[in-house]
Image (cartoon, rainbow, N blue to C red):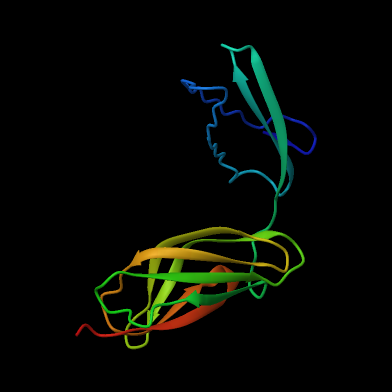
Length: 173
């Protein structure tokens, strides 16, 4: 991993043994780097695949930016899909959408959301979103097996973007 001046910031190496049947092998791998302490700016990741057995290698570079996350008024949150029959105590799936209102590629970043029932105290829930949203674009994020144990109307809030959505959960039959 290199910064915009070409200085190496980090290296991640993984060795994988692959047995090949036929002429080619496709192998997916991922690497993650902790960029918490990195400054905003331009970076380059160099990816190298090397086969010692066949004396071959290939490399590519991927450029990326670390930008300021979207803040208040810069992103809109909306419910793309929500079940008509969400019942208290039963799991349900929903799709939340994020719309970037700016002309820069950026992200919605949070580790907690506030769930605010209409007739009770609000509660912070450990629920992270680290979603890349293109400039003036939008994305949808599916969440599976969500369970809320009480019926009622709820407000779901992300403070970092100062936005919220509301939904209702029916009582069990």
